[in-house]
Length: 119
Image (cartoon, rainbow, N blue to C red):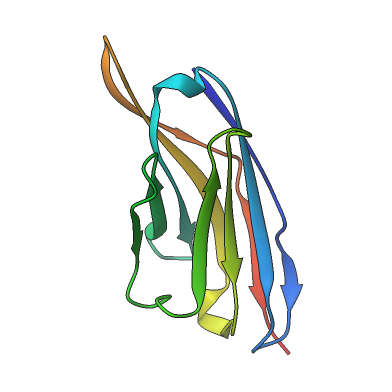
């Protein structure tokens, strides 16, 4: 089992910045990738960015060049620096951890943190 706790969401004006934070605990040794997903009202949850234990990153096209994901493997934390935010970035952002073990692979989710971009 992996527990994820997020923080850092809030209200920001278009063009502003926010930094999301996610801390993992529990069976962290099984985590091979972490990331952020988001879900806007009436839409499906979508990938924002992921990062592997080795540091390989992947971004949604809509956030490339504006968002940066980083990870501290010692502290078991993952960050999402969001710059030049747009109203369409408004969503609930969820931290995700992917694990592997004898029982196979699994996904774990945080409780979500609201990001609202509005003037």
